[in-house]
Length: 312
Image (cartoon, rainbow, N blue to C red; front, top):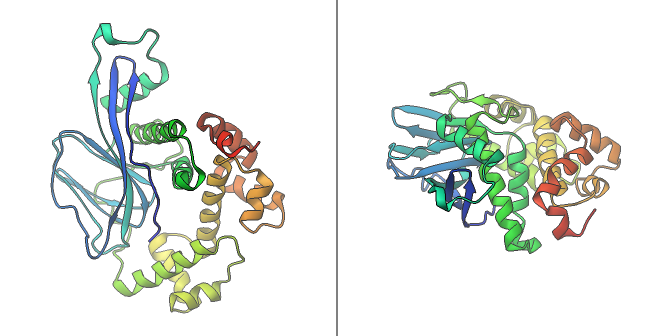
């Protein structure tokens, strides 16, 4: 299972007439040994982002199937449970948070604007589960490198807060890049039997470790312990994509993380094994809908990532 590092921070953000009191937590893993957190409830919100694997989420009388990229929230005082029974092991990061109204005399002059609008939209209406946009994984990639990179604590906090509001936006339906609200009892994904799960686990792990190399189907299948044809069928059945599409998506997600860290387009292309920056840029545009440079210029300045890498 893919593992992400994630900073555990407490933060306070004022947004108009209210203040968010939150902390980031994780990563949290549900495995065959520990498949569930059992039915429980909180007095606060708990919002999760699925980083890898699949599982179930029970929230009150509703039940949802979870997949990589889903954002979901347990509302205050609602009994809920997460489990990974019958699926890949489940890995996620999460936020625990609440909001408080600020007294008029305690409000900062000029507060409000975008953060207040985003906050009130979440409070007034939000889905329990929605599929998130690609930018969530770009932020996770940066946060996963924070210790090695020596990211200053204030910039680290800004990254965590940005991810927090991006997840709120996803559940509120603000970000149109998501795949929309996930229906209760989403049953289109078949439950995975143990043998297939192990083959896919090996294949996915092998691909992730060798994204910078030329990957051959025969090598991936051999490492997974099955035939190339059978592995193709398993990817289509359980992951809903071909092996080549999976490789392309994973490379571009890693590329997005490098770009947000401040790497130049040519450097990213080289890190991922592309001999031509133009070829890399063409594939990146297919996945993200814009060029690598445009993506970096649009997102990196607001994150401050180029500053701590010293890159243009």
